[in-house]
Structure formats: C-alpha cells, structure tokens
Length: 151
Image (cartoon, rainbow, N blue to C red):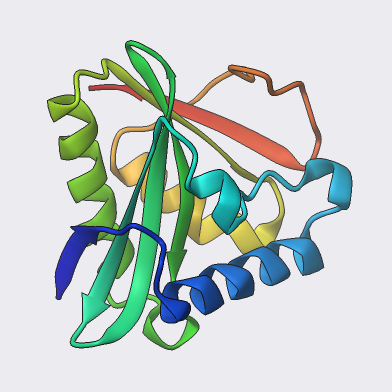
C-alpha cells in the first residue's frame, strides 16, 4: 500500500469522497454533518492523503490547519470492503507524523457520537486522542464527539 498527498483531481477519489459524504448524510442529521466535500478539501491549509493498493483507492484522510500550532483531522475513511484491515491505523500513524513534521503541536478531531462511529473513536483512543470540549468553530452537539492530542 502507498500513502501519498493527493491533489484531488482523479475521478476515483472524487467518487470515493462522494460515497463518504453520502454515508455521513445518511447517518448524521444535516445540522451535525461536518464532512468536507471535495471543493472544501482543495482549499489552502488542507493537506489530503490517499491510501492506494495498486490503482484502487482504499482510504483517505486530511488535516486542516486551524492556526499555526493546531490542525484538525478530517475526512478519515476506509473503503467498506477493506474495513478492519489496518488501513486506518496505517494512515492515522502517517498523518500524525506528518502533522508533527509540518510544525503542528496539537491535532484535534470531531466524530460522531452514534454507535456507528464507535470503531473510529476506539481507533483515535488507541492513538492517544482524549475527549475534549468543542474546538475551533464547533459548538456542543449531542451528535458529535471531540477529541485531541498533543504531538
């Protein structure tokens, strides 16, 4: 498997992200959906990675700079057919290291509070993320959980 910064220009990543946004919309009320679409992921201050197995996109993730020392983890997704295969752990380890190399001292995230998101929360806990109050522009939301870790 290969993890690389992606410019979001390929049709395969566009479809992969569209599936992600559709899934989040089906699970999360509209007022609590914080998944970024492809245009938002192309904005300055966002670095986006794909995980590929050959030509197939099997995972993705991004960080969005909040300020000079704080970034937010965004768009973590593993292909449905490849869940529980270690792809998310491999990618998260890579993103944490890259965020540190980019000079960030803190990495935070928002994820869902529903049972569907329990595997994600457990993954983040395994990598040292702790529950925290809302950060950045987020507000308290019963459908959201906030986590952070120092780098």
